[in-house]
Image 1 (cartoon, helix red, strand yellow):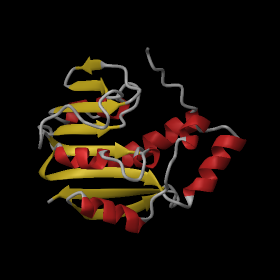
Image 2 (cartoon, rainbow, N blue to C red):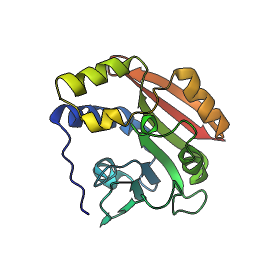
Image 3 (spheres, rainbow, N blue to C red):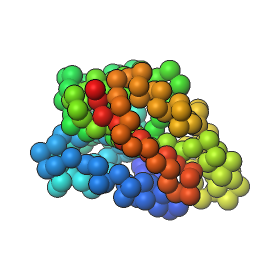
Image 4 (cartoon, helix red, strand yellow):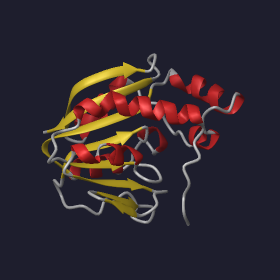
Amino acid sequence: MRYEDNWPFFEKLLSYLRYLKIRKYIPGNKAVCVDIGCGFNGRFLRSIADRIGGGYGFDIRANEAKYGNIQIMNNSRSFGKLPLTDETADCVFMLAVLEHLPKNTFLLKEAVRVLKRGGIFILTTPTPAAKPVLEFLSYKIHVISEESIRQHQHYYTKKELFERMRKNGCTVIQYQKFQLGFNEMIVAQKE
């Protein structure tokens, strides 16, 4: 099956603005980056390919592909396990993914497992205040994917995110709300 990127324009715009927010945290040109929840074709990893040494993108709806130094893999049958050795990556991204996963997801532990000591973990997720806004934008005026919003399982508070990072062996070095306070970003470092 081939997956298509048929997001509404506004959702693509929000995604692009999220990418702009985190680009400055990408390590140097020799870095290996992992994008968990990279989408159908690893759009973000491909946009930074010239700035990194290599990258791996994983998504349950990804189209398996290789684009130069970027490998995109479908991990729908791996039950949250990433097919990478321990401490492979200098940087791991989970951009607008955590809210789609069960609260006890094994994937955070996997993200930290593949991250090198001292490596950077960048996570974005909508704030609890975003829930009614996202539902309105999705269900009422249809400018973002209704399917995507229906898949949201939890909206995390700052306290919950800090706790999740701590439990998984990471120290938060920056927390910031953005997009009018409806999104939040954690930049953490593996201990």
